Image (cartoon, rainbow, N blue to C red; front, top):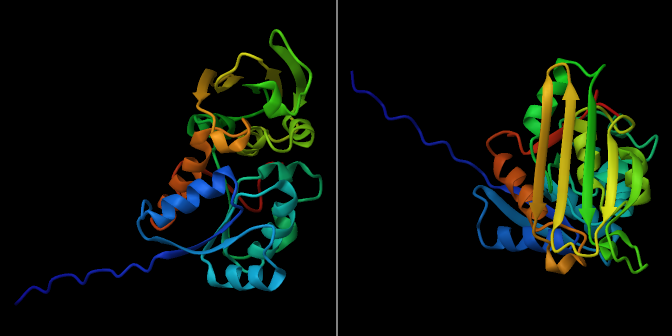
Length: 268
């Protein structure tokens, strides 16, 4: 009997709409234009000047929406996309610090809410440790940035701790610079149990993150020192946009470890 060659699977590119043209959005758009992400194509770009009808048409046509704008924009965009059953990558994940703003309230459907790991890593081992048990666990995320990136206009001679509190409080205090803390909290102990420390360092030429976990399962300390995206006024690490691009690259094949997947139920 003659053996038939298996048919080639025809993959249709995932259609992507990017919301926001700042530091993160611009890098994502350039990468998609350059063909850096297989099986993904850019179909629309929205910004603050885009009207409701343009946005609705773009969301309808997209398979995946990347929100790379602001927390205020995310409040509007996220429900609009989720109710259409589309996947959305949320960069302004500080939006989840608002009490009552929960994925469950948008209705159920096949779409997923995805948070890129952004400026830090180690989510695989930390999420695994959290799954093993959280009762006696502690997690602290320390961020060290230049004062201007934190909105501090005072002239500092030495580094200063400017905040210590929960991930939820950090996101409400520093909504544009606490996205990594929120993603980390939602992947592990929740927004009200992860401690966040913010340090302003006048000599900082990069952004540093230190993540410390302790539980009966073990003790982990992770440190990241990231170059700053020059288009972000010192607020955003260059790696953040590439973490979004990595999620986009994984989506046609299935989610990898580069995203936190939110959906009922999730830790809040």
